[in-house]
Length: 340
Image (tube, rainbow, N blue to C red; front, top):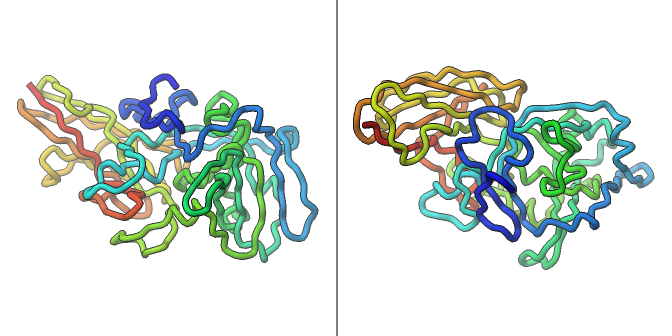
């Protein structure tokens, strides 16, 4: 896709240039791509979704049924759990994401709770299945599946999305319908949705087992990767820029899965001193905020660092946390540039 930086072509995985992350919602062609398996053929994606819930007859949803429900839009950030993995030391296995595995977007669709109606109390999780499939170890060939707590849906979170921005959801992004869970890392946002099943005991599919923390000094071993950790990204200046000394404008975006970003602090002296950036809050609880700061910069080499804090009081660490999967590394972003 135009404007993206491909990490792998098969399956397609591509990051957003950091200059695009200025806090504004991106149009669909500039949204990052993350796939564990090859993109299914369009002819294999019918747009029909099987619904299997205890205590009621099985049914099949289609686009016409969804079109008859209340339409909602939400500004949010879609972010890969491995975003920032390449910044971890010592290195871990997995796709070498820099910080371009995230995209502020505006999605349109319907609430999953409005689709499903009442879910019996004994249903503890909903298992979501996509049309894409491939071979994994040790299971062999499996479809892409992920489970979410049923209570999350009962409370109104979780959308069946059929549009990004002003355009229908494209095939490359999981169209015609994908599931999206705002505020959570995007491995839960199952593309090419083909099945929703309610279960009464924990689901232990390949990807649910894979996206867990091990060896992390904050999260307990075996705990699931879930909410997006607070993060800020510097869109400008970019790494290696040579700028005129004097006043330099530093700007970018910031977001969190635990509420709006309340501050972004910027340092050019290794974190000894911090200046507060101006923030333009995004239009929604999980939307990205745009931030900007004019800095006086003397001639020489500089490292600018940005650190966000969210409404829960969480701030970005100044040193990367290590874990076996390289997940949720939200270390403060640093950019080197020269002023002349």
